[in-house]
Every structure is written in C-alpha cells, then in structure tokens.
Length: 318
Ligand code: TXA
Ligand code: MG
Image (tube, rainbow, N blue to C red; front, side, top):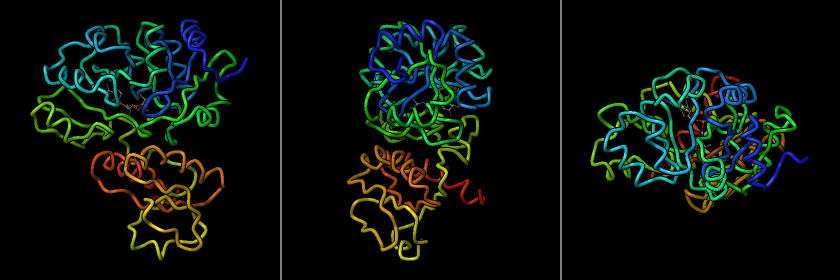
C-alpha cells in the first residue's frame, strides 16, 4: 500500500493501531502518534533521530481539550487560546497526568496546539484524542512543508504500516509561535506567525523573549540544509560567492553567477517558500545558499530566527 495517502479514515486507523502518521498542518508537516501511546511516541524519536529529552507538542482538536491536558493555566493563556486557536500558536502549560514523560521529555509542562489545517482538524476530530507531533524532519534538518518533503526526509525510516497524509503545501511555512505560560508573563520561546505584538495586545501584558535552550528549535544550530547558509544584507550581494543559490525578496535582482531559488513577493510568501527553497539548494547539490532576509516585522522575525539557526552550523565550519 502507498505510504502517501489522502484517506483520513485510514490515517486514523494507523494511529489507533500504534503506527505513526505524518500530518499536514498550516505551519509545517508533523510526525504524529497517539499522545497516550508511549510506544508509538517513542518511535517518533527513533524515526527523527531526536534525543528523548526533547519534548513534543500535543495537537488537540479543539480548545475544550486544553483542560484535559493541563493544570493551572493562567487566565491570559486562556485568552490566547480563545484568540489564536485553531492556529499557529503553541502554549506551554503545566501538564495533567495525561501527558506522559515520553511526550514531555520528563518536563513538568506540556506544549499544546490546535492546528487550523482542515485535514489535521478532520484527523483530530476522527481520532478524538491528542496527537503528539514534532515537525516531520530528521533532527536538526529543515521542516517539511509538503508531503513529498516528508517522503524525502523520512521515507527510509518509516514502516510500511505508517502513513504520510497529503494536505498540499503548508500555508504559513514556518513553525508555530511557542509561548511559555508557566510564569507571570508570556514568554515567547520561538517566534512564529502569531507575533509578540499580537500577544502583547491580546493579553495586555509585557512579553518576555529569548533566554532558553530547552527547545531544540531554540538551539543555536537547527533548521539547516546540507548547503551552507550565508545570510547577507542586500548591498553585500555584489561580493557574495558565485555558484551559490540565492533566496531574496522579489524586488532584489539576481546578480550574475547566483542561482535564484526563491523570489517571494512579500514576507508571508517568504515564510511559505523558504523551506522548499532551502531543499531545492540540496536537490541541486549546491554548496551554499546566499540569503537576503526580509524585514523583522510580522512573521519576518520568525524567518530571521530560523535563518540565523540554519546559518549557525555554516559559520561553525560544518
Ligand atoms: O508548528 C509547529 O509547532 C510544528 C507543527 C507540526 O505543529 N511542530 C513543531 O514541533 O515544530 P517540533 O517538535 O519540531 O518543535 C516544537 C518545539 C520544540 O523545540 C520543543 O522542544 C518545544 O516545542 N516544546 C515542546 N514542548 C515543550 C515544553 N513543555 N517546554 C518547552 N518547550 C517545549
Ligand atoms: Mg522541529
């Protein structure tokens, strides 16, 4: 039987049988297992090559399931859930006994998110339980935004009984905003489509940023293709090494000798196209990609965050 499917009933059955299913979400594709099935969840870590102390996000079908998975959620976190779920926001909250050590990496907290993608929503509704899912890439690599990216990343590591649910290209393109809700103030652990400004205006609280390496997505090196990533300002393009790929906003022309991989028309398009463009660099076996980042407004902050981490390994002479 084909690994890639559009059959939601089959995907739900696979999860109930203890298999794993790659799931399209509006941010990136996730690699899911029933969150209460410790054996299936442990396979996610194996398939990704991910250290077992790195916690997973539990995906829920609706906001009403927040109470099942959490304890002691501050009022302002409820407000965030009411405002941004379903959507690209993960809330880290004190866990209930439903969230096992396997899912949380032994932490006393759990990351929760209600995704908005219609296929993820449909699957979660059929399953009726939480689905634990990290991004569906090998540890440290670029997150997948199409089912064929997942095939390329994980195909060799999946069992014939696992499935990849196809839901087209992810519309947001970078991972969810993660907000730690265990302190007095919202703490953004990872920037995403829901911005710091939005969180501030929704909660009326000051937002704390940075200052943790708990989450692998917040380690200095992550989200990296094979090609070396070199982040430059537009004026420095003239001296960028030739023969490399180029990712830059549409208004920036391609200098001679660079291979254009993406020319996003605006910041939202930049987020949507970035990971596919980084993968294209590897498909073309380019040694490097020169990237002119977007401005830091809106989702631009998340893009710049991911680019910095993708470039970190390069700067270390990987
Ligand atoms: O958009 C997304 O968030 C995607 C889609 C599939 O939902 N998922 C995703 O998962 O990016 P992952 O595992 O690749 O990144 C989730 C991040 C990790 O860096 C993890 O350490 C952090 O969330 N995280 C999860 N639970 C946490 C917790 N209890 N405390 C702190 N960080 C946590
Ligand atoms: Mg990830």
